[in-house]
Length: 299
Length: 299
Image (cartoon, rainbow over all chains, first blue to last red; front, side, top):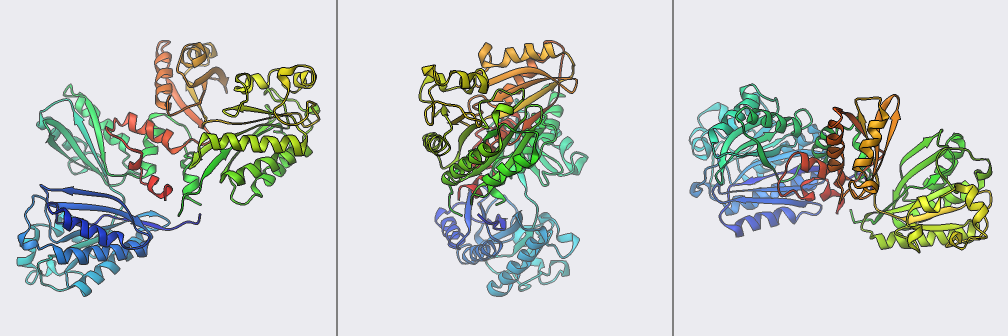
C-alpha cells in the first residue's frame, strides 16, 4: 500500500450565494490529480463557502493555488456582503498535517503557496498560524480586523499591515491569509432550554479566554429556538472532546439543564473519536493500534 | 490507492509453551506476500497461541493453509496438555470479512482452505460458523465437545462426527475447525471487589444465554484478585460495546459495586470504537464518514 504523506487544506471563499461560482472554484481544486474532496459547506447568510480537501502536499498546494486563482477571477470583494469577517475572495487557506507530514512541512507549504498567490496573482498575502512571521499575525482575528474595507484603507500607510507577499495594494480580490495549523474540531452542544443567556454563561465557563479549558473557544447562541454552546477545539490531543462535553454538562447541571444532543461539524480525525470511546469505556492501557484500521492506514 | 479487499484470519494453535514452535508457525504465515501480522497472543496455561493476520482473500487463505501444514509437523496432540478445549494442532481457523468482501466470500474461503487441509494434509476438517454444513456445527463448542480425546474415540463410529473434508481418522495433528464469522470483540470489565460470585451474577444478567443481550457471551472470573466480567461481543453492530458496558455497570450498582477499568483484548474495528464515542458524546446524525480516515481507507 505504501505510506503517502497527506495534508488537509480548508480554503474559505467569500461566496455562498451563487452555486455556479462555488462549483467552478471546487472544480479548479479537484482537477488536480491526487486531491480528494471531503466536504463543501456553503452558507448563504455568511455568504461564504468552506472547502475541505486532502491529498499529498504538492498536490494540495497546487489545488489551493488554483482555487485562489479561480476565485480571484469570479469574486469581487467590493460587491460582497455577509456577516462573517473577511478580507478576500479567497479569505483564508490553512494547511493541516494529517499523516507522514510535520507542522514544519505545512509551514513550508503555506510560504510556497503564499508566495505564488502574491507574485503570480498580485494579491497581498498574510502568513498566519504556525506560519506567522510575527506574533501579531498568529491569529486570523488580528489579520482580519475591520475586514476588507479597513485593510484596503490601511495597507499602504500602516507598516503593521504590510503583507508577507504580494503588493501593498488591495484589488477586487482583496487579500488572503495563508497558514498552517493543527486540526480544529467544531463541536456544538445543545441544551434543553431556549434561554441563550445560560448558554453564554456556560461558554464563558468552559473556554480558555475566560479561564476555562486551554484549547477551547466557545460562545452561546440560539439555533432554531434552542440554546447551544458552540465550541472550537483547537488541539483535541490536549483538550479532548469528552472533557469539553463533560464540563459543559456539569456547568449546565448547575442551572438544572441537560444536554439533549450534540453535533460535530464536518470531520474529525480517528484519534479524536477513539480517545473519547476509550475514556468513556474506561479502557486501561489503550493503544491506537487496537483500532483495526490503523494497520491498514500505516502500510 | 485502490480498494484492496481484505479478510482477517485468526488461527488458533495448540502450542503456548515452546516459543520456537510458535515462531516457526508465524513465519510460515507471514511468508505469504500481502499478509500482515496484527497480533500473536501466546498463553502458557492454556498452552495455546492465537495469531491475528489480515490481507487479501487469496493470500490469507494460503497463509492459513501454510500455518496449518507447519503446525501439523511440529505439534503432537497426543502429548498436549492445557485447560482450553481443543481438537487439533491447528485447532480453529476463522475467516472474517473486513473490507470489500462479503460473508459469502469468507464461507467460500473456509471451504477452499478446509478442503486443502483435508486432502493435502489428511487432517479431518469441520466447517463451522457461517460456513457450517448443518446447524449442529454452527458453534465451536459442539464440534470441540470432549476435545481431541473424545473425537479420536468417536470419529469412525458416530455419523455426526464425520468430517466435512479429510479422513474419518484422527492422527497426531488432530482435527481442525475451519469457518467464517463476523468480527468478535473480547471485552473485560473489572469491578472494585474480589467477590467473583458477584461477577458471575452480573455475567448471567448480561449474556444472551440466560436472558441478557443478544450478541453477548459472558462469564465471571477472578483475575489477579479482582472480579472480572469477561465478555465476547459477537456482533458489535447490533449489540454495541457501550450498551454491554452500561448494562454491566447498572447490574454492578445493584450490589453497590463500580467499574474500575476495562480491557479490550487485541483489536476492534474502527466502527466499534467510533459508535461508542458517538453514543457517549450524544452526536446527532452521526455518519462514519465524519471520521477523517474513512476517506483514506475507501480510496
